[in-house]
Length: 118
Image (cartoon, rainbow, N blue to C red):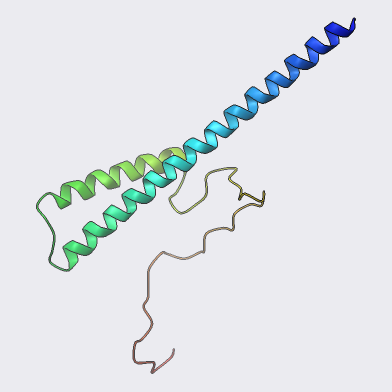
């Protein structure tokens, strides 16, 4: 095999690796964009819920909330449960993200009087 053949073979390998890296990068970018969209939908759903509970709801809020829930279900079907990192996700320094805290997701506010700890 001549020198040119070796150079061509090596160039082909480098091009294949670059193309593979590009596909991985594109998939990560799409996952991040989808997460940002899901976060925005969650924020809007929270706003609708809050406004409804304090008596400032608007006509059509229930329909919009149902639409958001359906879109979030579709997100979970593709990317996994909301609140978890996409499969294979890493931080910029290459470390894996910490797991989400265990629990049922309920919020228990602390007593504002500061009395009576359990």
